[in-house]
Length: 112
Image 1 (cartoon, rainbow, N blue to C red):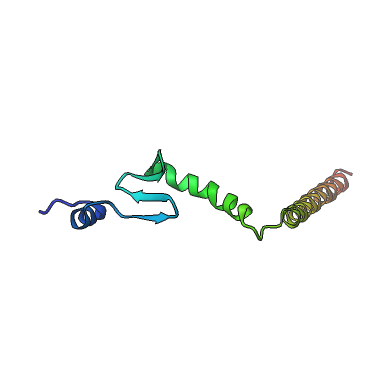
Image 2 (cartoon, rainbow, N blue to C red):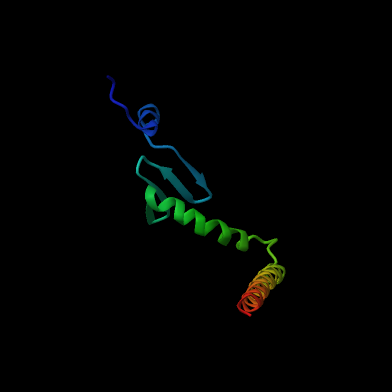
């Protein structure tokens, strides 16, 4: 049985380096267990296990950094969503109180 290797090893054998890309003066290289990001004299290694949580955190942050992002509109949208959520919670609480009230009245009638 042939030994299985990571697909990046084959790429490295063909090209002499792991796959990556360059954006301006930033170089990003993808290796089997990590991603390295290099800029001038600085290099950061991100392990594969931390990549997904980091991306989950970075995507909303990158949206906010967009020049078309309107913080006032975003805040207003958040407040509207929160108000709807609170309104729904109040409605549920009211229904629970009413259902308790009707069941307690029925129990009193049965006792008499």
